[in-house]
Length: 347
Image 1 (cartoon, one colour):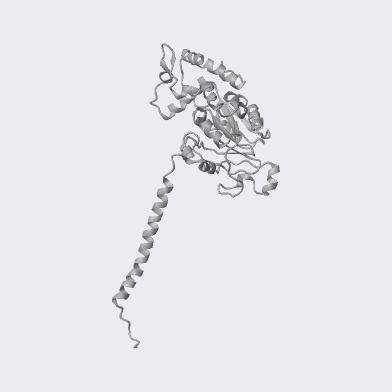
Image 2 (cartoon, one colour):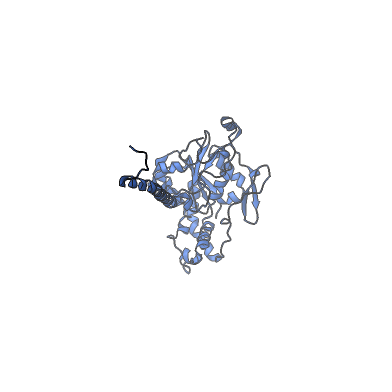
């Protein structure tokens, strides 16, 4: 065989062309992979908790309070607030306590107050599992929960649970030992607040009077309107008592959360079996907003208030119509007082 220049055959040329095509094929496959990845990343689930009302950071990455000294020994120099959402410290469990109601009663304030406690780990957004997303399954629900260490409790809040017919049975099937917190408020004021929130999103909404009354001259109340129906607390509670005894409930006064937040939080902490950590040192009353804001107990730092959606001015409503609403709710309120053993002073 000679040592002259090699003349490539037809087969060799095909092989070289294939080698040149490989980078183009790899680029095409990479583009297809990236397109598929971004498509599925952007198509969120209809049961994504962040879609329901509360715009918030990653579900497991909210403000994390420091651990109590007793638990710091078990985690050394790793306080709970430094744990990232993907941390392997702690476990995800079903909530031992749920704030189940009611809408515009003060549930957001209560949740934010509770999250100050070092032994409470609460989901910030409303998962709506037991009313809208139950078909996702309990494992899906548990995976939403923040990780907890020994001695901490897991919580979530979805105020629409209280008026959802299926919710009591579903929660009972998860755990019959679940503690249930219901934040209630004068149903007349609650209905107006509910309307005000909806009006802020839908400026073309009819007047409160037009929605609340079938006939303003006769004073007939339209109980089909959700803003009115939610305030019939006794009726909704009857449904819950078919599954849970009264001892599993704590009824929190929305009015007292404003006028005496520390006092009401004492009751909440006792009910949850927590040490009374949250005290009057944590609160500052904001006169402009008309409700308490959180501050550091040492008095340092700027108070942390609820968002702009809280404390909206209510529309003016004819006083006679308000009296008619009070008359409508009175028998339901009386029954609710009897059922709970607590007079909330709405009449």
